[in-house]
Amino acid sequence: MDRLFFDTNVLLDVLEKRAPWFPDSTECLARVRRGQAQGAVTALSLSDITYIQKSTPPATLADTLLRLREFLDIAPMTAGIVDEALTQRLPDLEDGFQLAAAQAWEATHLLTRNQKDFPTDSPLVVQHPADYLRSRR
Image (cartoon, rainbow, N blue to C red):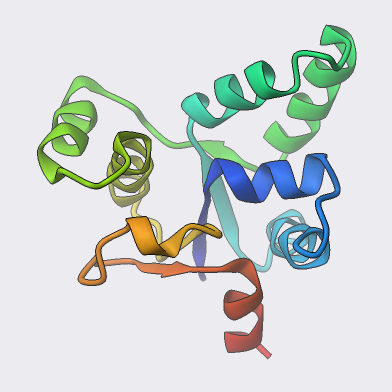
């Protein structure tokens, strides 16, 4: 079974209904909700979303994140994972945290719209949600 790790931008595509990415990102989350894959995010992503959506009433945002937590795991973010991210030297340090957490969670795929900032020799598949869905049809 695929283990899908969701980068923050994919979750924001769903929560903010961002065109044109909303349908594919929503379908990837739906696959997890239906039990066709397992899914995870980091607490870092949830924190970033809370900050980015600060105009959303806190109770509404909490309810939304609780609904996501019904089917998404929280990937670990331990000191060792942070250290791993810091030594990867990716162009965007936040992407390093995401990649290290995805690897620790044993993800098979990291879904993001920002593939260019991830290493091409990663042990997991770094894909745009649309590309992941095409590969599963």
